[in-house]
Image 1 (cartoon, rainbow, N blue to C red):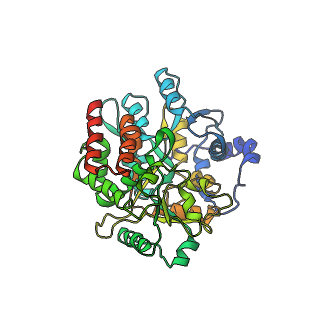
Image 2 (image 1 turned 60 degrees about the horizontal axis):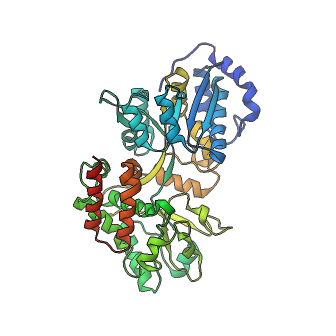
Length: 449
């Protein structure tokens, strides 16, 4: 991290930040935050009178939460930060970069878009020590470096983005009371999970809730299943080759992952059968967990799904989750699938690079952690600031990962990741052959190349 010390900065930054102090969400020096990291950063950076512009996808409550983090950057440096969130960020950032009117920084929810702009010369490469910092300080650090490293306009690869605010998809939701009454234990391995699936069927129950319905996006929950299974039956480099189509979609290793998902769809294992799984809206898929007796015992879905639990459900008490385990026999560590956002510099400036430095401080993570909806692989951020054990336990899945991979369908060309892959998984869920489905997706991929 750049540490250009400036004489007299501490005093200047303190006086510059006084006007902001009353707006800070958490008083400096109070609570279990790493205020030392804030003080050190403040003493080394003075941008009084300078302005930083940032655009991104965060609107509504997320806008407010990000603004609460920005407040501490402003307090520390004296800079003014103007953040503009947009529901059409992906279109807006392309237009602004092409017009030469991009802000200083952009927050990308999809690495593919950042990679495309990097290849056009619209992003500024970050410094080499930033890549080293990520590798050393993020759990599964090299995975994060790889995720944010793209070829530039000259074909040379460089780190172009900084990962921040991550979502986890490798989790299974359940109702603790239902598990306790039936005598079921949390599985530690994929072998255990399959044994539990069969035990529930033998006991006369239905193990799984599955719902692929999502309007025009129907099918995406099944792609998450396949992506997670890819990481549990193949090394991460095979996942990467699949995402880039270096190996075809109908490669036997990909077909195996699809069939691994299919295991959980077999007769008696999914509520309502395969047809119901394909047509049930994903927002309705948790319903069966909460009936008595349970219509199903487990639901694989991402961290956002409690939004669609019955009103009044207390996560951690009425519903809980566990990590979707890996195969002990495959010895592939503890892979985690997820998504997240990447900060990139779209109009280079010293204050923009200082903001990248700020994201490398514990306080930049802890302020959002202490509120809601924020997970981080940064091990130095204090988990004690999380407002609940639920968020703390979710974050532990991320910090204990040996491999992290981004949602594959978001990295593939839109016609595949948000088209043929979705529809192909609906076909497979309703009974089509895995090899034939995979071949049809590959044919679609070949047609766009």
